[in-house]
Length: 315
Image (cartoon, rainbow, N blue to C red):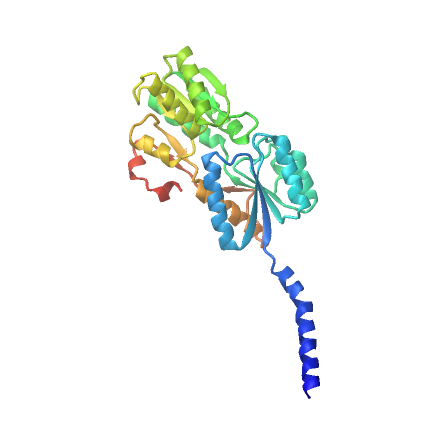
């Protein structure tokens, strides 16, 4: 009887060992590759925090890769994600044109690619897009500037042209300018999305065109640089209207305290990150979004509402 019992126990152990690997495989977490072009821009820092929180909640693993302003590097990252067999890719493309073949290669291999914040010029070659029509933001920002100054020369401080949000924002700005011929563009400068670049661009504009009535920036970093340039030249807050876009907490505080910035649009980076992973996890569960564009909520911040906003309102 003892020998029979031992034989039964041994058989059960073999059966358990043979089943266990299959069970582990069946329960393996889904993997999502994330390709961003910056790990220092505050928006992407906030977005990553939201993505990681939602990933933990949804039980998926994230693999973050950063390319810098290098489309070839980002294309290679996408190819590597395919090679390592991720289940889905979230990508914020640095160049709206140069990543087309990388997207096509991933999708041909059966790996969905969802754009986040920026998208391809050929939207048919991405599976979905978590973001917005950035031209609307150019319209909103430039409309606020037009309302504030009425007429006169302005300076535009923009980011790298290949990025889709810069292109879309500029289209929106130009559409408002076309309706306001009394507002003229004294200078338009493109450069990196940094405070230092904003400081340099604004200094150059103010030196060449000291009569500008507004400095209109495509990001809060650039707007912060513009505010520093005004301060260094002894120009009091409010004399030159400064507008940005992102809604970083420090910029909201600057608007609240009349410290050199007058307007921004909160992109709600943390919320955006949550929405991106939520969209991706739903996709992997067979629940695709109803529309190609999954719009992220945003909020205009002005001197009128800045004091009432809480950190949660702009998160």
